[in-house]
Length: 168
Length: 131
Image (cartoon, rainbow over all chains, first blue to last red; front, top):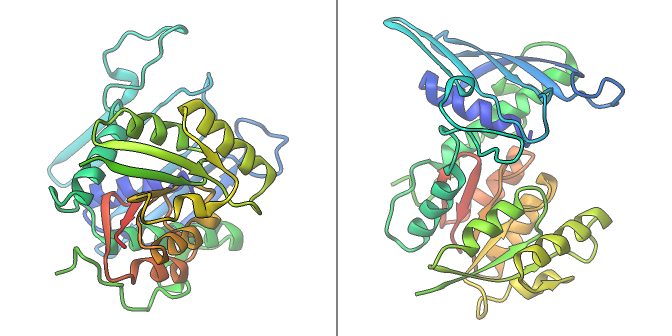
């Protein structure tokens, strides 16, 4: 739930709509003896039929490594990105985040300060926050039940989306 | 105007939040506070984060829920406490940034987002809520 929301965020943004049904499986990869799985696959489908395979995995070679791969197959072409292919000088003594990730949290918090100060409008809506949480909860339920779960099955999903400052 | 920022719990990503906000000239991080009843590891992590950032630590959340002393509170606990801490801060009249996810149930998320001033900021992973 804590880290899995990132890939659901990314999938929702790349596909232009949130998943409506998900199927999750889990496996131990980094520490097989752990009672809790550390890696997850989510198969997701959106209302218009787009499909996504989302993977969250902790089996990296070194502590704090970051590896992100995205392949987006569309009607007009294929987009592929991997942090492995980004330029940068990395050693055991100096291991900055990949270029595509470096500074992301700084930008995020700077935007928050701008928003609080009335200098910026929110770039994300409360409905999107709630939507990602609903998909994550559905994925969690799928993992427990071992079957595909529709987001509609998540408790309280049928309630009206709370309106916020951004929903004018 | 300098924004006075407090932390309600400071585990997991708190070190990054403290480092970045502490380095922003628009911000003064005033304190980290943790619930007295929080898990032992959470109290230890929050205390360590405060020490690393060089800001005061309080073993009582009220220290950062004083609207006269704090403008904004970052809720950076484990996710199961996010909504409850956010609502407590909102009731105290301070703005809130909740680390992701905003809650662990939709009902709890709605309780936060239904605040009239609720608004998302930056990413679906963190939610800013006005007081």
